[in-house]
Image 1 (spheres, rainbow, N blue to C red):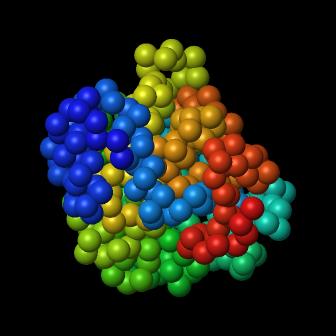
Image 2 (spheres, one colour):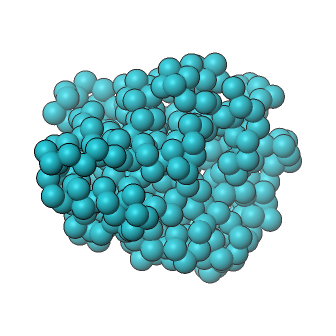
Image 3 (cartoon, rainbow, N blue to C red):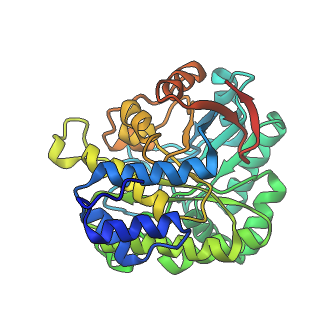
Length: 365
């Protein structure tokens, strides 16, 4: 790393820390966000990523599924949820979802990525049977389903403990939790944004419970609204501390918040600089995470490609048809083919690796 005299002293100190394997502090993370030296931050993150993953970039052939968009929560950033009886509201049975999958399935799909609303009008057994139906119809496909916030909701709905909810879902066929529901792990933010679901403490507790019973999971951060830089860094540090205890997270996924309309101007969207900086800083702060994901649904395909030189080592998957970010105003493709993902990664001079849900290598291209 170039440590010429033109670099500010704090940046030189951060570079030395990273190169000596020392952990960055909250103050380091805040400084990086405030710095205008994007290229140095990107180079440093790229170097860290190369040590962890060489030049490999991972993706999966997956399919997003949404059993219900009816939700009791009223989060300010969401445009996906519907009230019961509202036009466009739906709740699909397991059989209906299997029929939908059969119409859109290809034999290369390795994972169902399932999220949805917190629908209080159906019992917990409904959610269990939905997973059972999918697993029975497609036994070779991994099921990545439900956020920690949904697990908290299921616990209230059923009266079961978090561990019992998770074990019941695992017996039905659950292989891993999705990373959503974290938003920003700050109670100030959650109160201001009306995050009517799991608290910071509950979200982290559920992740720890999952890890302790052998269920590895994912973690997100929804940035770009009212949170402060300090809150973003504190979010990362809380995840880092839990990862120290459990080593249960596969990947960290920074998610750029989407406006509620596709017609929203650029002032309502995160900037390219902010997106790249967030990916790079995530890579530097989360030293105990193997992977940082570039989510093309929220930042676009070209910026996702560029982020592969800013610390990202995963470009998610084919998705088939993403709905939540697009309901909020995302302008990106709702899915990509395997060939498109390979092209994207090779265009960054990296080696594409098709993986399974558990980051086992399937094919290297």
